[in-house]
Length: 69
Length: 411
Image 1 (cartoon, each protein chain N blue to C red):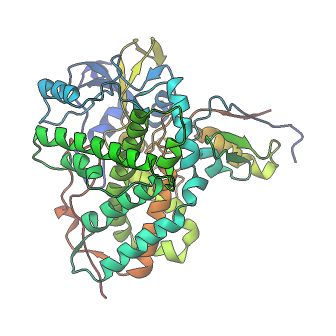
Image 2 (image 1 turned 30 degrees about the vertical axis):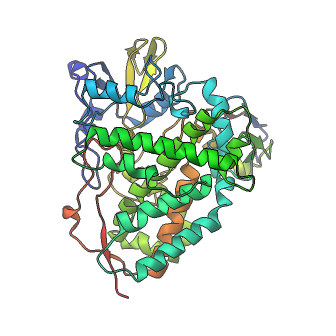
């Protein structure tokens, strides 16, 4: 178990609603029905979700996801 | 460096399973090379994956040329300068209202957001039952059809059209595909093309007006009409883009993917024996065929940009050859092998950046339903023609695809 706090931040202004984050980590991210903009369900994802969140950040076409210490 | 400075046209001579061989040779001398556009401009061609992603994700590049029109990277032989101008004058849509593929931010952002929520994985999941119904009735008809059965025309095209029409809530009409189908022919009369585009536009305007006066109407188009700050021209433009982009790609990928599955029976069988693998199989098919084989729309630098040690000047064009990027061995080891065990996620077949395909979730769902139901109903499905006799669309057609795909099976 890591003690390093990981911070998940999303830039809703930059989001283009392509839904890659939901594909990669559906437990952590959702999209609003009205405009597709990202919603964070789990601001402090469990360590078991970190890889999926990193994938989401890498796939995001608007680079709207930051996941770092 | 001298090789990089030698400008050439975009390679387009592909085979059924592989993009043009020149891409790999170009990539070996660096991910950027010079590219001659059909109008005589010299720009850049990107054949590498990482760099392609960076370019498509970089908003210092515009999706249009300085005149606001999309840049052509391949020009069909029947379009010379004069006819291109004539077509642009003839089709009365100089400012492309609602065409989000000719907009940059911030204008693009507001338009895209009217669509992205309605095309998310969850939203398209709501029409999964409708897609199942469309596919089931087509499979029934296929089961009683004479063999060999042309999957391309009798299945892939009508199913793709029916599905996008179900999402939009518009009538299924020939006008939606006539213009695009012309580009898949070897002989095209320019006037037919002009007429077909105008007919499509008129038909969509009629749909929009009918919807407006039908309070019981539902679907994406009805939702857009409920957004009162969109004018009719914009709704027509958005709907035309969705209906064309929404079927042209899938209708061509469905036969290609089926060829790959029927010649790699292990993955064909896995669709029902290991359904949990279906998503990875579909994703690899999407990467492998990169159906819009010319690539993403060319971008134009809005300012001087240094990328990968190359200075791109403001106004210069860069074209990302997506089919090449998706075969970059740095990103996809042994890229020319169809391998659903690899992680194909992150491929560029849907593009990347703010214009990434809005229909991608619909495409994945549609492909999965079609292939799975076909495998269940026709486990011994076979291609009724040697693969090397399958005829591809002409090089200038932006969609990779086969003209027909004859199938046979035991009843």
